[in-house]
Image 1 (tube, rainbow, N blue to C red):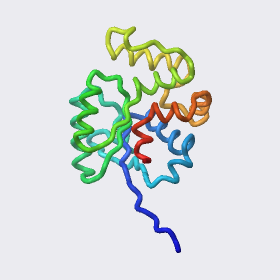
Image 2: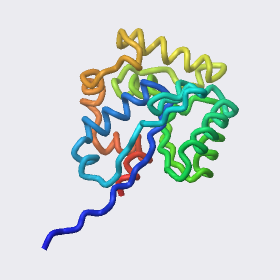
Image 3: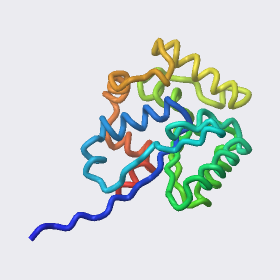
Image 4: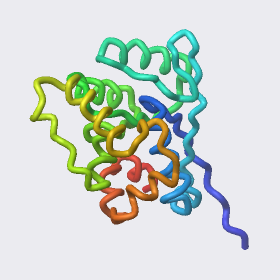
Length: 188
């Protein structure tokens, strides 16, 4: 007797920008490809809202709660009835409010501590400075971007699978799953 296949569950992928999108793609289509292929969870970056500057699920920056709220409202209106999975940096003063708003909307958010550049520097043992070393998060973000470019000789948005392979080569799967707990919780 054949086993019946269950239905796939679809999430609309919304990333803050290209770096986060590429990181997500690496984790789901390379590093943990088999795990995500076997899952009934499927992600789609097909959110397009031209008037809000949202393309292929990329928000292209959010800046603060006001900017995020307006983009989120449009996404919810245009893609009503669908669950969204957000992959965002956690380096805004408003990050906790943004997380609350997403959860109140019954969507899922995976924050990157503190941002993609910081995380990749840290995982590559490049010893980045911490946010407490800066007067504000804006200075910290600027530092992370410039330090990343200095250490890796490219921007995070230009990282390819081979670059991610080097960064993640010394990081165990359990640590990666812990860092991206919300992402991996969708599989259970």
